[in-house]
Image (cartoon, rainbow, N blue to C red):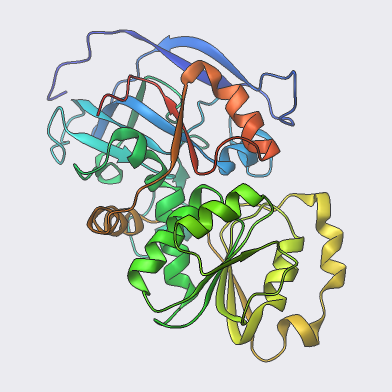
Length: 351
């Protein structure tokens, strides 16, 4: 080791020990005391300040993208401080503030999000619902000073994967953009799109009236339900919902040659029968296309964080104590609570 170990030998962490539905009365995560991990060569040890709660956490816990082993510590929108470095790690000085996203490690090339070497933070390896986390140093990213810890956390997944989705949409300035669903990722994509494509009208399809009001406050030209027709057909629509019916409705709202980008790691089966309404002539003909977003690369996060600071993006965040994680997950599952992102404050989040 090229730095001293942290003075603490034990840490609080939330363990996922079995897969199953998130429902009232069931605590899916157990608070435990575990040894503080030690960084391997090329890794850093991060003392966690905050960790965002993401819909992908639901997919892990409920088995749509199951961890390869149990128990595991979830969480992949992590902000904290480098407190120890493994042998050969010199990229981040001790005391520097870094973030860790969904990508924990991979091949390191342009297509690393699709590589069989891809490992996800909080699924394939222990994540940030804990007081300490270890990660390869090249997959820890400096946090711009403009952001407080709680603001930076949702940028590491909801924001960065939204950035990737917007790139994949292939939009040109002035072309209409639709956002299907309006949660943690979409509220950041809206702000990002207004900066990158200032002449493009943005249409938001959302179930909750409160989400539509937030979208209008952030600059959406039009808001409505998923069944409402927008003022004009969109050149691209980004879908961040966990359901199938919005996919069909989004395809109906695309202009010829338009692209639907599905920003979801899994779709839930509850309304899969909605796909029976899919009409080739109405939804797919005239070169409409569907593209999925799979994982994320180091490049996505490294490019996105400075851009988010330059705009600057202002995530809407509600902070909860680590011990409240089960309640937060249920709130996320049921679609309730304040608009924007949900973040667990693990270590004080003083910055």
